[in-house]
Length: 178
Image 1 (cartoon, rainbow, N blue to C red):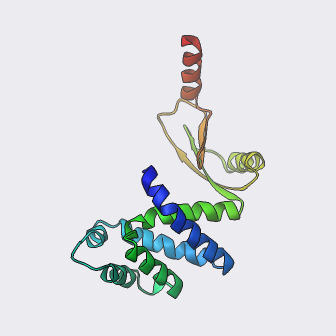
Image 2 (image 1 turned 120 degrees about the horizontal axis):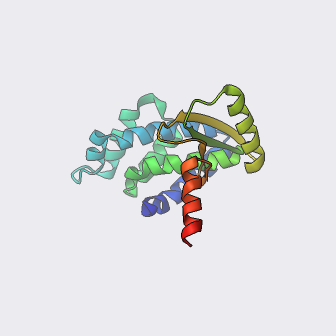
Image 3 (image 1 turned 60 degrees about the vertical axis):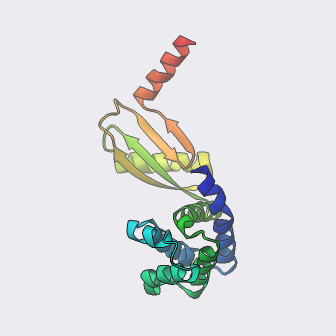
C-alpha cells in the first residue's frame, strides 16, 4: 500500500497544483472521483491490465466510460497516466488529491463512532472542540457501534482518539503489565 501512495503522490500533487492555479479544485475533485470509481471497477481493471491494448486505447476507453464528466485537462491527465502505465493509481491519486484539497481549505472530515446515537447538540459541541484543537473546519460524520461498551472513538485522518471504555481498559491493562 505504501508503494501505491508513493507512486501516486507526484501525480496527485501535480494535479492539485494545476487545479489550484486555475481555481478549479472542486471541478478536479469531482472529475478525479469519477475516474477513481471507474478505475476501481473490476471490469475496468481488466481493461487497464490488458496487455494487448495500447496506452492510447486504455486512456481512450477510460475517457469514453467517464463520458462528458471529464474536462479537457483531466482527459489529458488520464492520457499522461496511461502513457506512464499509471491508470491503476487513479483511486490513490484521487484520495491524495482530496487530502491536499482539505489541507488547502483548512478542513478535515472526522468520523465519530459511539456506542449510542449522539444528539445534534453533542455533535455540534464536539465539532467545535475538535475544530479548535485541530485548527481546521471540522465536518463530522457519526455512526454507532454496539460492540463499544461506552465512550467514543474519533478518527480524523491519521489522528485517532480512543475515548472508548474498551480503549481505556486496554491502556490500564498495559500500564499494569509494564
